[in-house]
Image (tube, rainbow, N blue to C red):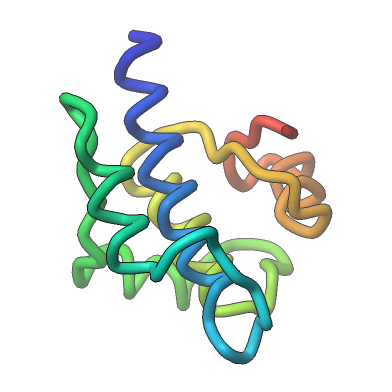
Length: 107
C-alpha cells in the first residue's frame, strides 16, 4: 500500500514541478525539465499519470470552491479520480482538502 501511495504522490510531484517551472511561474529546476523528468521516472514503478478525459472533466466539476489555478485543479481532479492522497504545500489546496473535497497530506 505504501509503495502505491509513494508512486501516486510522485506522479503529483512531477506535475507540480512542471507547473512551477513554466515561464509564468518563474521557477527553475537544476537541469532542463525534460532531463529532470527522465531521471525522475527511472526508479522502478514510477510513471506519469495521464491527463485523460475523466480528469479533464473532473477539473471543471470540482465541488465547493476549488483552487483557481488550472494546474492545481488538474492535480486535485487526478487525486479524486484515482482515489489517492495529494501531498502538497499549497495552502489553498490544503484548505480545499480540509473542506472534505480531496484527501491531502500537508508537507
